[in-house]
Length: 53
Image (cartoon, rainbow, N blue to C red):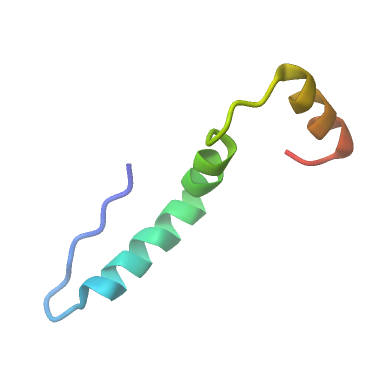
């Protein structure tokens, strides 16, 4: 789990933005979106065959 330490005189918005960038870089957001709904194995195979991951 990525961590962001709030620097002195740094706004919470900037720290949140850094956290989001870190999570995007590590692929966490992509995983969350992929696991949001159940995908049947046949649908997964069809999606992979099309070239999307």
